Length: 264
Image (cartoon, rainbow, N blue to C red; front, side, top):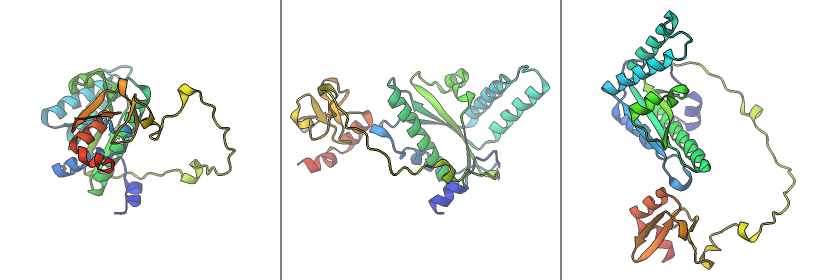
């Protein structure tokens, strides 16, 4: 199917059949997620696929959390709603918890969270292409301490979403506001005045880097790296190379010659 049509026809599926989802479909979803665009190649995503008793445990966590949303958890309507959540969870063929890294740097944390959700979209589209339905859920449950404890998540990771996967028993109809109502085409805009930067604010460029002894160029992403504070380095044929992120170092270590071929 054409990718544009696939995007338009994908839906969040509220109800699944009991048919099992082939393992290869799930694996393709996970692989697709890892190819999401990601600044500095930090690769912040990790996945937990719930099966067997683990899915039952998760169903019980959802059951208890659902009860907390009612003023009176013992009320019949609360019990009925919580039981439905429990049964729906058990009846979902595949459940994937997607987590992301939480960097101490706010900008990096925001970029990693965005990259993880792009990865989730990749998962949804791969599933849809295979005729498999999905429902990515966020909400208060992803912050539930009981769920974090169950998944044994460290403090530097957060749950981005829980993706429910199965063959659709129901495909809802949805509409979107036309993009024209959400878009401005900006053409004639005044040019900003040139910024006056002090010496300490001068932008670093790749051309500038060789003139300085305290910076190096990341051979993978070509970003400027401060040598005195660089956390990621590799040795290759007697030379030290510096990296701005662990993903860049991993890419380089896998095949150093590929990144240095143009330098020789």
